[in-house]
Image (tube, rainbow, N blue to C red; front, side, top):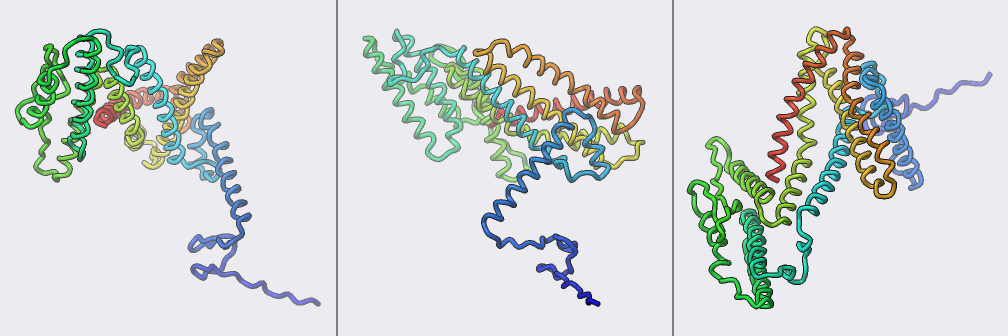
Length: 407
């Protein structure tokens, strides 16, 4: 009779616990060594990529087409084959806002191209397009307005004011050169330096904000003084940050809506849009616990944990971001293809309309499937939760808009 020999027990190299698989059940370390040939590392990398890609393929179709399916699967414990709710929501949030940021920039570029004169294109002499002496003087005043706006921000940076002063002198010399070509008198030094002097006085003054007037009597909104913010119970660096934020906010708003130079207006609006989209993801993170709290309040008698409502909120927002991403991509694709194939605009418009209609219907069906109440009660709570959510979202977006304008 052959003898049976006991197999040698393998112990974890990290904690010494006997192993019964590929991972230690005590500390979680893998049995496999990280010291391996390069081709094995490439195989592991491909396996990891395909595994993640497989989870995406298992996650996105039901997220878009099967309301509540992923949430119920998560509650049932079947989570391994799907992307985690928070990671799913956050990645789709970033992608959706990135797509809308691109679309917003395209809209601003088209609006700027329509609103700005063709002669705004930079040439060797920025005043070469001006045909009369008065046009040169008006153009010089507009460009100096833009530099005075930049001076308010450059005052916070070392050497910034000196660079702007050099740019002002360069503009005045170019204007004088163009005036000499037109046979007109150069711009008086006192008139050219009056706005800069006014800005210096205004920045040093702590009086109440008043508008500075240009030589032609038009109000100049770029030089209203900003009083330092001082809250006694806040640290000094917080008050300094608040003061800088107020200064940036006012400068951007004045430049974006009151600057006479179209290029300055365009740049200020682009800054505000970029700032708005930069704070939107963080704002949406605030909406998740607030929306979960609404669900907890309206379904308090369903005896569900708050974390269950958080999972519902994460999957709901992940679907909304996925739908908005598809809407933005369909719109950009339609804009790109219309000049080459105008007929694609109609089907892509139908896709966008279908997605926008599917969004509220999806959330209603999801709420019905997860909380399992009758249709009358589900419709009533859906309307109440939606009404409260719209007001919360409006407040969060307003805060994000203000923060973005102070970018």
